[in-house]
Length: 326
Ligand code: ADE
Ligand code: ZN
Image 1: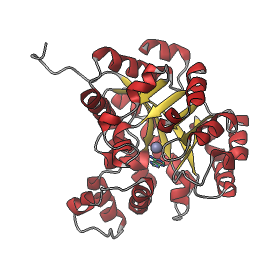
Image 2: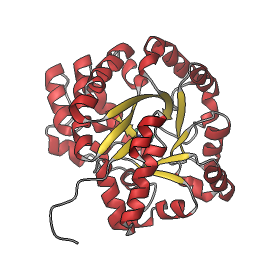
Image 3: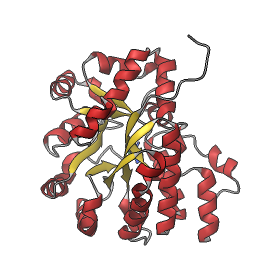
């Protein structure tokens, strides 16, 4: 029935979320003030008006620039805590959170400051918000393979806090194979592996992420649909794909949400999940993405439940915890 109290959002896991992409204008200005950083925008509204992107690179330019306000352990803790509060309201019960250490170390912020700050917020998340958490350390693919190796070595003292490594930033021209060595080290150290692939880049990059890096999940992977053999492989191995529908529209990976291949991907037997990517920039958090695809694609209740269930199937959870959600 359409009457009665609004239903709570479906319980879900968020598997594709850049913590730096949760920096809302309000917090950006507060941290700028606290740290004496001058932003090139007079007001929050003026900043918001800059959130009109032609492609991935035009977004990344603003995303990296705004990180200038993140300087101290407290800043990273406040950023993560603000995300967790929003995630709770969106039905998120488990969050696997990306961070970009090189975007901070390049500005003189030590990797330990970043990880300790994030970890402090994550440590309180189960009790405060009922959300279990993992950290995924991403390498910037438009930086060198050596820089990724140096970053991994710098993170060694903190590897007990890190569940997986990932690969993000400007995709085209930076194939996964460039990072073969650091992924081998990560796997040797017992970490899981994921990589952004097939967002702006071609299906060949998804193949490389699978066969050269040996990833456990593909982030985005929307362009996999251009390659029938790849779809068959992803379906046969039930490789999870972390789709980010609102992101795809804002970064013009697709023309509009009604054209999103999500339904075709489900029909092809792919293990797809719905996530928010950089919600402060793309117009919505986890459940906002669920609602948006429901409305634009006419997804029924059963399909939404499948997507929520897939998020727990694809999560890096121990089997006893996973079983609670399935
Ligand atoms: N870094 C933050 N968001 C990203 C995205 N959607 N693709 C690649 N790198 C990113
Ligand atoms: Zn992403």
